[in-house]
Amino acid sequence: MVEPDYRSGGFKEDPKVTSQVHEVVENLQEIWANRNSKDKFELASGNKYYQRTKPIFYDTQFIEEKQIEKVRVCNQCPGYIAIDSQAYHQDGKRYRILAVTIPFQACRFCQEDGWDTYERFKKDYRFNYVYLQDKSTDTYMTHQREERRELRSDG
Image: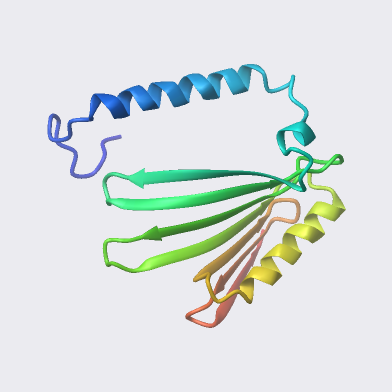
């Protein structure tokens, strides 16, 4: 598969960026190798959520995205994920979304908490879109604030 508008030699990566990518990969490989030796509650420092911030740059569209990813720490299941993402697009407009993903193995509490999170953020004017993917019930929800509509898809 070839990336659209790709020209060999047209994009030169700064060696500093390449070095940073290698550092991130090494760090992730170490985390993966030690994934079973860490307690998830320890990783979250006793908090209800484990949280990390991720900057992402889409070089073909020149979009810079900032994500705040939260994982609900649960002793009965893997928890659920909520991603708060905002980006400025080529049209100069800033978009902000919240996406909630509930895994197949989610316990009843995390399912309910994930749905509550979706419902709560639907009312938050800061978000253009709020999404819910509940894999445990094969349900997908989209709330579009500006269009004032909600879409639902069941398996």
